Length: 385
Ligand SMILES: NC(=O)c1ccc[n+]([C@@H]2O[C@H](COP(=O)([O-])OP(=O)(O)OC[C@H]3O[C@@H](n4cnc5c(N)ncnc54)[C@H](OP(=O)(O)O)[C@@H]3O)[C@@H](O)[C@H]2O)c1
Image 1 (cartoon, rainbow, N blue to C red):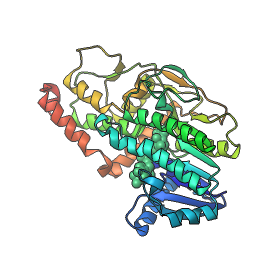
Image 2 (image 1 turned 90 degrees about the vertical axis):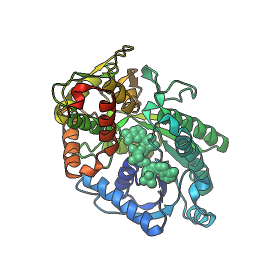
Image 3 (image 1 turned 180 degrees about the horizontal axis):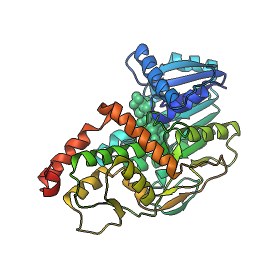
Image 4 (image 1 turned 30 degrees about the vertical axis):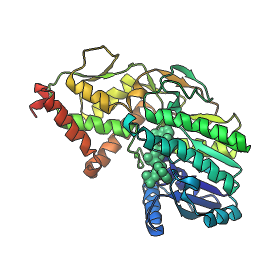
């Protein structure tokens, strides 16, 4: 089985490729870089991070890896015709599309759409030129946007209501590729992981900086920037919202199991846990580990936000969607797994350990922005820093 994979320098793509290395065949991978050498070095670094999260590493590398330089925002993902022909001759069976922008800000809409919607379209067109018999698009369970209740494994309305541009463009991408695949008569599958966290075996983050980890960094910066004894901080949301954490190795297990079984249930699959943790419990666990007391989740009440809370609301634009609009994802049978409360504790602890040993990974903009806004808003308690 030969595969083409995008997004291999990122979190999910690198773990997927790392797991797949023990299978025979060719893996042609798309990497953004100026030179072939830089592309190979970037790939090696991301595979090393993935491998370190799951020791012992793969028993043997049986896959031949071909590194292709390119960019999904360009036609044919930037591959030259001779490379496309060479890969077509080699025979690509499956095309796995992980690459995307996880940016979410409204003012970056065009750029995010170019990566997520344009990128998905270019990837599918390239897959067709390569003669791939199946296109697997990695989406997100949060294309459901502001919808509540049971979320079906089906396309959602493209004009639905979303929490941010990331969710919206990922939903538009699903529609774009479903349309293009049906025009071309191509087998297209959409996989929707929920909130992907580090390894179920070691608790290591494995290279993720988003989702849970971005939220931990925010809490860490608040702990460092604000004095003890400050008033409680209220995050906007519903404390009962289920948070569907899924460990990266379990998500990859599900991907490979579904592919091996030919995606029996249909074109759309949620890669979600059998049981979620409610937002209030998850927040209490993470805050206790970080040492940021008195952070609560409360429903919105107009006009009652403190300047600090208003700032945090902005920073929460990405994570905020997880805390609102309680939803449960329909889940056709794959394997049964969950991230329990002890797992969440361990994942948080491991990440804090990583942050302590690699402080440069802290988002410096967060600390600076927190301090500036706190001071300019005249929040006297916080300004005693
Ligand atoms: N992490 C999660 O919790 C989660 C949950 C649900 C769904 N997902 C989905 O899973 C996929 C991977 O997410 P992730 O967490 O692994 O993100 P990530 O760590 O940010 O990785 C994104 C990957 O996409 C590549 N990429 C972005 N724009 C590109 C472009 N124009 N051309 C070529 N490559 C490009 C990046 O390459 P560079 O290294 O060059 O930037 C990187 O390899 C995404 O589709 C995301 O929507 C993620």
